[in-house]
Amino acid sequence: MSAEFRSTGAALLEAHRSGASCWPAAEPEEGSVLLLAAAPITGRDRAYREVWRSYVGIERVRTVFEWMSARPEEWDLWGRVATLFGDSALHTIIVEAAEREAETAAIEAEEARLKEEERRLLSRKVELYILDPKAKRPGLSLESGHETKPFFVMRFSEKWERERVLDWLRWQKDRYLDFRDLCEAEGQLALERLIIAGMRETEAQMKAQRRTSGGRRPLRFWRGEA
Image 1 (cartoon, helix red, strand yellow):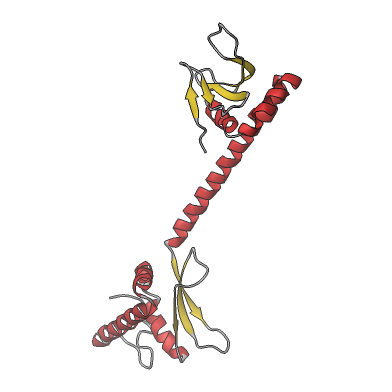
Image 2 (cartoon, rainbow, N blue to C red):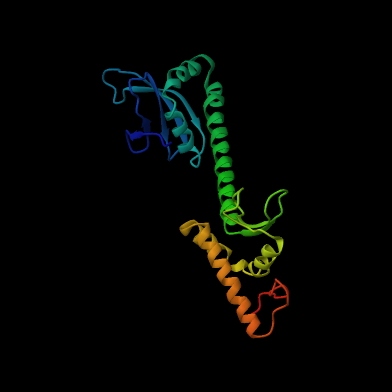
């Protein structure tokens, strides 16, 4: 979450105080973060004093400043730590903690990006599986690489019926994504009908060319060629 801040001059940024006696600030052009405290002194141009300053570098100043600004409940405590223990103690509390959190966030973001990229790549893969469960009808299924359950299952009374469909379906791999789209849009029955129709059409074509085998599996030796 980005911190809210306001500019009080050409170079100084301050977090909204919300009544706190101490509050964070930053000088982006110099790469410094600061802790300011109210100092209402008559006749002075500024109504604050510096309690603590640390140079973190131009490339990191916004990260540390936003980390500080997001923790208003800690501001007064930081002011007391700086007064009692000096700048180095507060540097450890603020700068090192902010950098650790930023590093952790960057790692988590990269892991999430890689995980999403992997999911996206797997979603473009669909695999065909042969189902032979005990005490259940034989079947075929189509499953997306990023899912744990098949999006399509087709059951048969006999194994030879499954093998007949498999003889055709195994050579349709380049259409599996389209099959998934159809199944998601119109349901499993629509895809089952398309598969049966495609199988029978190919069987008829191969029979007309005298390229079918005998028996219950006309496409048994077919290898997807036209």
